[in-house]
Figure 1 (spheres, rainbow, N blue to C red):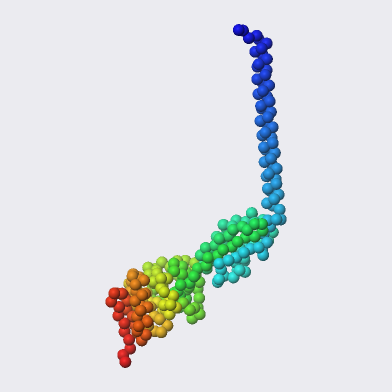
Figure 2: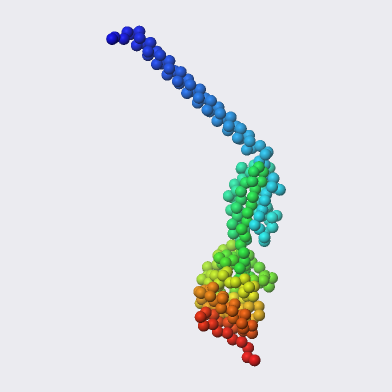
Length: 259
């Protein structure tokens, strides 16, 4: 059966018509899509730049700090009231706070609609390191927190460690010091409160002196838990002891004044 030329032409025109309609529909969809994008963008831009999200100083919550004052933290942050909280880099604020030697970690987050949450993790001084007639507060990581007057600090004082360079904000590179701090950081609270002086002439020669004048020869930073148990027992059973030697915890030695 032969198809006439007129029928072929009619079908061609019909196909072209459908293609044109399809293109128009696609173009209309794209136009609507881009229009919606513009509306959403403009709306969000107006929304986020409205005064609703302007930072208010009284809406800045600070927690975790015991040594540092809120006023000093706010001064470090240098926040400008009226600034949109979305234009503030919370990461940069945290890094700025961590430049303070007392701050071990800082976390800053936005609190909608107009505030910030600031959480501080402070460093805790474990001992007083005395060098060149100057005192330095150090934590268990041998990080130098601050320079202080030794007679105004009630912490175990570490002596006999040869140190060439000390600076606030840096970690002291000393194996003997790390050995002494390891023992101090694991020391039972009752004993830690009694320790006035720590002598660390080497990693094998750690000696403690209590506020009652008892000398405790601890030796190497090994068998720490066992040594502390022996020390506790000996302090309880021999209240007149002037010296306790637990360098060999299985065979401890004590010395008491002669009667």
